[in-house]
Image (cartoon, rainbow, N blue to C red; front, side, top):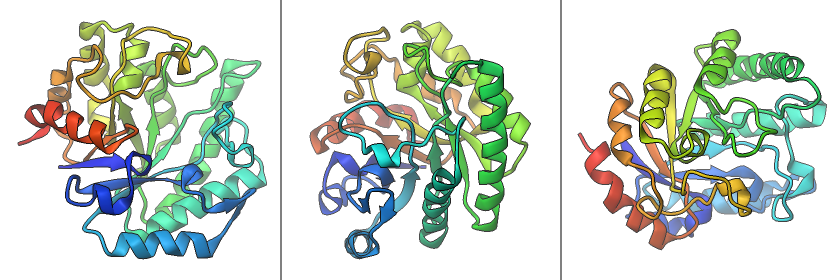
Length: 269
């Protein structure tokens, strides 16, 4: 296993030495003009990465309706067109070249009809998983927070229903403990049951903290340092077969360092 951090937590050279992996957050790397990848900008980041002792995971494009997220890079996996597939396949192809450990995908949006949206998303994910197979890449479908009623795959059962329907060895689960805590209303027993349900399918893990209930700030999805909210991280011991990256999805190096102190006792062998 290894501890990682998201690329927005600090400069690569800052993170190097404190974590073993960095999650390249593709929509927020500043490597796009509109929806077109600027290869020169990307090469500068990859050159810096090559000087660091860091493994990689990657976060693909997703749906967001906030001013800080580039509109041209919005991807709803339940409603994809040719441009969206190009963005996602570009990301997966890069992951293959880098030997990336996992690529995180967000579920799509409920839309006008939940079942139809689930069906479209399953079909789209099946196509992405086939492309991932060609590039020797593992995809992890992330559980989202139920405090936003527009999200699909918040509950463990619906998440696994989609993964099982795609039925690909290249698609598993990215377990996001912060999102699960919100879905479970901050109840530690429900959170433990959530972990038990998805544990055999987990290929990647996101770690951050919150208070377990809706707030006006990102529907409660605060992404605080572990130990700052209400999550009992002993639930991570339920991931008995998992030996991959525990990625600290927080916003500063200080939060990375604080989070490491909290989770170390739960994730170290």
